[in-house]
Length: 478
Ligand code: AMP
Ligand code: ZN
Image (tube, rainbow, N blue to C red; front, side, top):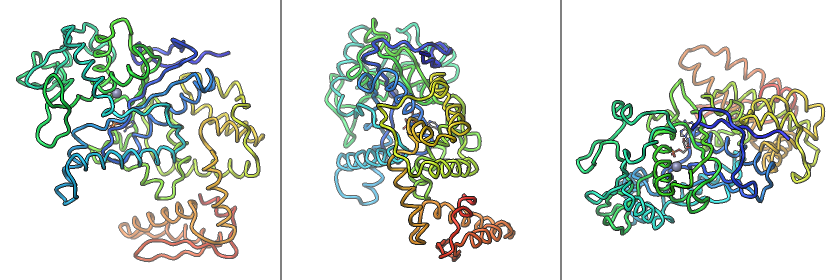
């Protein structure tokens, strides 16, 4: 049996994956700060580690893998959003509004990540449920002189941990020179980072030995991973943007709190989803959400397929061209397997070359290529392998069937219609600027030839299936 090999960011090498305990393989992935809808970049770690979770469950047994992904539900961005709502006249105390916002965001997150076919982790701890454990961990660090209290804060003494910087490959002096550190009068050293900070007025806060306050972000993951996975576990994941300082700080705190543990054996980092060469992020404002795409009629499994087609250690751009290509591929796969029943996943064994691709540091691109090139001659195998990757699940298949029926009977909008209508609308908007309507006219003509009535108005584009709808012509346009 081929061994799973994973690239370890800490050693910068691909390594054989040897779990600490094959009866309980443990993975922790940093989850979202719940102040707003997940943007498409936030979906990347979810999807990458979802495939790894599926692979580990296959390899070690579904009951022998524990996957933890947290919710950061205490954060200044959440407070700022709640305050903004309060100022805009929303009723309730700041605490009520914070609670409302985090609950709402977690529900959105679940709905959006379910829609792209991600399995729920075994545990989704919320930081606010582990405040006592965080305080205890900080007290332990202070007792060992790895941390100190100052002016209502607790700070980690970075120079007390000689290996600091090893994970991200930086020296402490480089980090200071890079001025990535916040200077504050109460710090012994500018490198020291916050474990606990004071809360004033209506800010969320808990009683602690250092006064009323709230935890820093990094201690949350150290405390929650310790509580749920223990002092050593197998894999720690997240986006590359978290490697420094977040993961470096988690590692320092946990290694000092539990010096015999070692924390995570393998660190994995996904590269960024980019927009024109820059990381997609809320702060740069260059983002769109998973929900934006779903609302435009892009099926969740199309988002999943596009996002998984690029290796997780390479940057990726979302383009309309990729979406269109994947829509065509999936339309064909669904057509080939329309009348088949999926094999019970417990009785299905993937092909060796497909599995080996995944075991080679998650070469999902190769696994998809294998599916597309050779398995389409065996639709049952295509369906079962696609489902192994979280594609063509029951929801996606039911949606396709509903679409096909509504198209065939000429009634109602469908995901395919919505996607074509969006494309035509976009072309039309571009044409109004360039005053070149060739592409608009060409698409309109092709739609009409496929038996679709096209209505365009100031409000947008409406496509209506006519009695002579030609499905193969329609699909050629997708
Ligand atoms: P945040 O809520 O910003 O802490 O992000 C949640 C997760 O999404 C983390 O694992 C981040 O590393 C990841 N992430 C954020 N932006 C991107 C992006 N543009 N591409 C890929 N992953 C991202
Ligand atoms: Zn974390």
